[in-house]
Length: 96
Image (cartoon, rainbow, N blue to C red; front, side, top):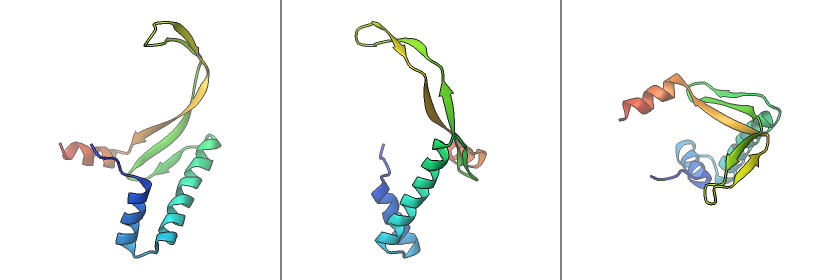
């Protein structure tokens, strides 16, 4: 399974829009920075037809080190979750 990298996204934007490498790179960096800043504030980011990112607080819990079996304390933390839009979900399910 291949991974789409930031460079490959920039290359695709260049091919599809005719923007310069600097314009495409700056646009992508700005887009990602806006998403990061919004999530840092604890707000959701929704892209219609794609999905929604949201920040969730996870409570502290006990876990185990899988190598040693030793019990460890997992601290409280914030995580980002992503949920697909129904449009994207339908497209992915249709490709099976």
